[in-house]
Image (tube, rainbow, N blue to C red; front, side, top):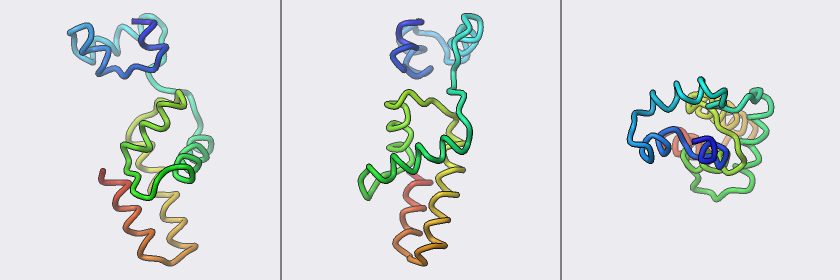
Length: 111
């Protein structure tokens, strides 16, 4: 389990491999001293998300951003990603005053 966790496998994937519930995996990770989520500040996470968006494609959705963060070995709660995405994209709307950006916000937050 430690090897798969080090490779960045999700809790759901580990649970599937071991044929146990994700809750069991989470408890085992705590028992083994493995972090289930990255210890990253909102400021740093905002920077990483903005970088992902700058290097990503136009139709990126929330899940694309989450996968890109995981490839960077950043594992954070879904709610944190969604909240910071909304903040980043609303700042873009304020600075650009464009409906194009509003549709991008909707795509990122819904998919």
